[in-house]
Length: 140
Image (cartoon, rainbow, N blue to C red; front, side, top):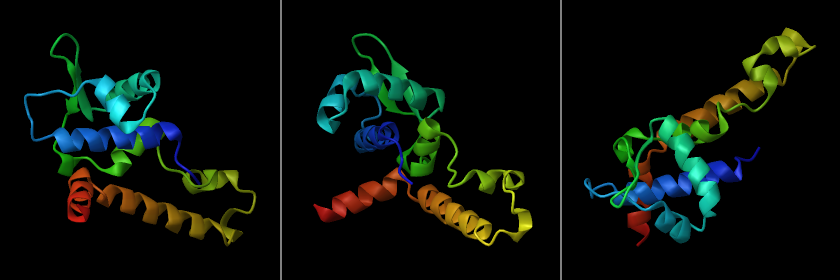
């Protein structure tokens, strides 16, 4: 399983905005985010739109326009961002709909998929942007 390139870019953009978060009245220019995070500008525009619809960022146009986090970094997780871009985490279709499996309750793999999904979701939910910034700052 691999997250999409779009979700990876969204995570990079959100981490950039989390770094800028204390500057409450300022907004980041999407061109600067694209350049510094090595994200194609046209691709970033689509990502920004999706993150805004999900309520993770605020956008504004004009001379003083740009983007910023809609919530504090500690209130936004990797799971929030990945699901805003890629939709709900799913390792196998049977996890969300057991009726699609022809083996039903006799499938020994089903429980493994369910446990793996639960662990992944928990890990992504626990990874908030404030924690990522703490790790980043500890390495400097």
